[in-house]
Amino acid sequence: MKLAILGSGFISRFYAGSLVAQRRKDVIVSVYSRTEKNAKQFAEDYNVPHYSTSIKECVENKEVDAVIIGLSNDMHLEAVLACAAAGKHVLCTKPLGRTASEAKQILAAVEKAGVFGGYLEDLCYTPKFLKSLASVKAGSIGRVTWTKSRETHPGPHSDWFWDKEKSGGGAIIDLGCHCVEISRNFIGKNIKPIEVMCWAATQVHAIDAEDNAVGLVKYANGAIGQFEVSWSFRGGMDLRDEVMGTEGTIWLNNFLRTGFEMFSTGKGNNYVAEKAESSSGWLFPVGDEVHELGYSHMFTDMFDAIENKREAGETFYDGYIVNAILDAAYKSAKTKQWEQIIIDDWRGDTGTTATKEQTSFNEKYFLIKEEVLPDGKKVFVLKDKQSGEIVRQ
Ligand SMILES: NC(=O)c1ccc[n+]([C@@H]2O[C@H](COP(=O)([O-])OP(=O)(O)OC[C@H]3O[C@@H](n4cnc5c(N)ncnc54)[C@H](O)[C@@H]3O)[C@@H](O)[C@H]2O)c1
Image (cartoon, rainbow, N blue to C red; front, side, top):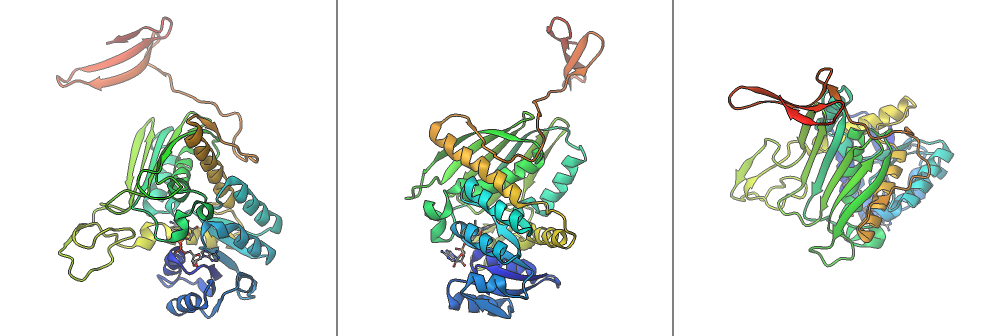
């Protein structure tokens, strides 16, 4: 693929780092940045033949097959509209919009133009996530009842994140979008998210948006997706997921304490890992961040999808659903009530209801629980099928 990148900041550099790594055949042929200085610097750093301070010029470049958007949240809509107008495939970073209304306009624009819309949700492409999802889909942990996804760090690196108007919110929109989509994948994207209960607060920073939040997303099959986000967590970037099913459990630690530990007196003052707060003492570096954060698998899926004219694992429709869930979370944080998730265009299963298993023990009883006690004796907790009485045998 011949690619253009819009943006020359933090994520655009991560993306470019992934794209130029490992002798990929895909190449960046154009980069846009607001200032010529940054555009030129990016072009030099990644060997990009063309740079511009005009989005239009960049996306209309005849060399370009697909455009990657790495701009601040307030620019996503404008940038996608420019790509759709130029008839170019487009991949946009998270969150798709600042609100579901913006995300809906973004989705409509690519669908109307008939171009590809890939949602760059890298944390749904980490090696650990992909293997976990394959296990869940193969039934290894049974029916998923509860997922928990946590992203916490000491706060973002650029001014616009902290400005509610430009970003669309605080830790919920910035980090909650990852957590919600991780849970949706494990629970099943075809299962409709119904309502949200969310606590959010500005506990630390002098900003209008929330810097901490916890939320519960309820799904039509009774499953719960829990998210925990913070912009005031100290000690690096904590990316952890848990999946609980009727037949098993998965615990994932994607970033901190993944088995690579190092001690340094601080000599050398090295870069350790994204959002690491220190380069001395006991440290938790990450071997290949670009790979472990999912960027490599993400781009491979996106480009294969474009070439084979199929949908990617993460689409603009997914981005829209995530925004709809986060809209409800913001509403709930204000009303302190469960708030309905408003999805105008639901494309998944309909009529799903909550289920629970009734395992028959024998003709008289259902089995609730069996356990081996310390003395070696096996006991069964049973429920009488007729009377409902609970007994132990
Ligand atoms: N894991 C991830 O997927 C991940 C991680 C970080 C950031 N992001 C997303 O990437 C996007 C950019 O974040 P970042 O961390 O690179 O931020 P950044 O501040 O480092 O870079 C933002 C880029 O947008 C440009 N920009 C900002 N305002 C603009 C405007 N009004 N007009 C034109 N250009 C403008 C800046 O010049 C810069 O090139 C955001 O949507 C963010 O949520 C995703």
